[in-house]
Length: 206
Image (cartoon, rainbow, N blue to C red; front, side, top):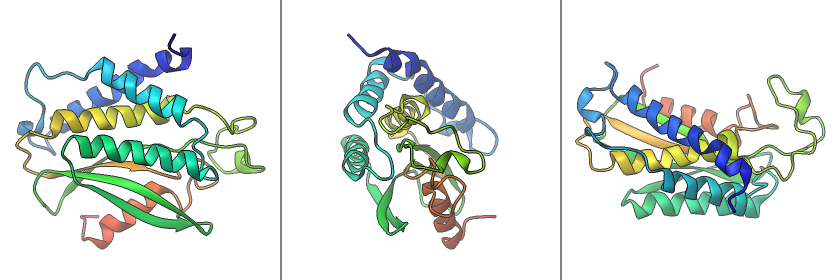
């Protein structure tokens, strides 16, 4: 029987993919970049990704490298299975190695649309809950991270499937971030902050 927390958040993953479709059809990205009529996210695929991340890789926090890297390798393999080249954006934080996973679609344009989700979960490190904007992390070391972590990543992978054969006119980067939870939340060690700095160095519009 499927764990209840997996079932609870399958709709979130579908919603994430649907919202990304909507954004892709807005004026700042041409309508030709939207999936064709009739295309739809697959509930079965979304369920597979959420279950895999939240069950097999539960507790994938910044200080649990085996689970965190296992989740990263799973995401990497799913992108690669779709025929996408995956870049590991490696960085160090608190003396430990981490990586974002970047799958690029479309031509190499100056303006890049970045769509991201994070694959790490929070832990119960003492004092983490005292950081500005942090959640209450007490007792959370082994949490599955189905919402919004696994559901967001599931939507990201499914979006890659829907976009991979589209005639895109602009570069789109689908990025799975590490280190979005405390103790790196709102610090330079966040995966999204690392990626944003890399885009600025590459000459992205400010």
